[in-house]
Image (cartoon, rainbow, N blue to C red; front, side, top):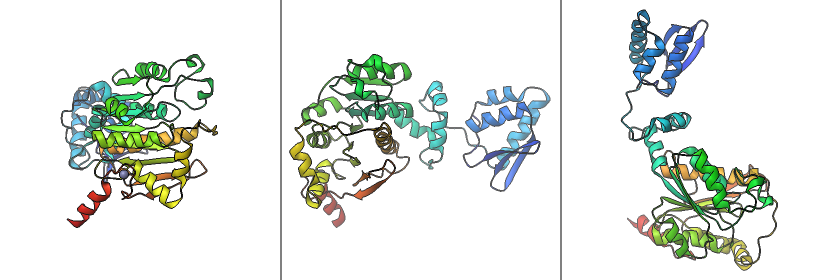
Length: 359
Ligand SMILES: [Zn+2]
């Protein structure tokens, strides 16, 4: 495998292609052949393929000189280690890999980030306007197993905001419809949806067992569903990330960070908002207006947080914190949320934090 390092650039200067790294450059004359070679080196290609593109005979010695010069300025990477990723997955995720390339460390190359996604198992609670987009984006990003549950059927009024659905899907369960749409688009992934309404922590513990992350994207019952998701994390040890009610987060890692019960306690203490939510939770959902970009934007933030957590490429921002969205689509404030002593789930994060500080 031959590949240019992430910090090397390829630029056209007059009639020359320049491979630039720092202050040093290697140049070749522009031609379709060298353009193809440059493209292959940017994306990374087997040496046979690069040799094929460069042509045989006299050109092969020129290719040898080019590669020698590129090694001389440190612009070529060492061959990547063997990965468990199939050629089809690597090809599909060429651009994903380049994104991860900007977050590489000595211990984590771009392939290791993608491998973590391919091996990850995520459970999404609620597959409506937000959950459908979350599942879609996780699959697009390479997550290998996406499971989830939802009890509803598609209604005509869902067509303004759910991912992928159309008029022909109306009347059918959301789980069946999304499974069909996803299965054809992501043949390498495992998609497991069950038509089920969550009514307790135990329901979720059973369904989400064996997953790496639970994502709460259901909005009813207003308070209980959030506490059930965090409660399932506490009971099973599987971390969870929540969204809904204009918030993204917190990302709850049992025994380490704050949970939905901590958020409820904090809101009760500061504004009483959570108390009002608790009182109204068994009433039907108010008919709030929704424009597609709102749930889509929320889902994008959740999916990005999930990818950060699953890969470790960068730190999640909703650990011991949550994002409170503003009235517009593009505004919001991150609020810190340390574990609460009065957490309604008694998650213990508060005590663990104190002990950690004492040590
Ligand atoms: Zn808590």
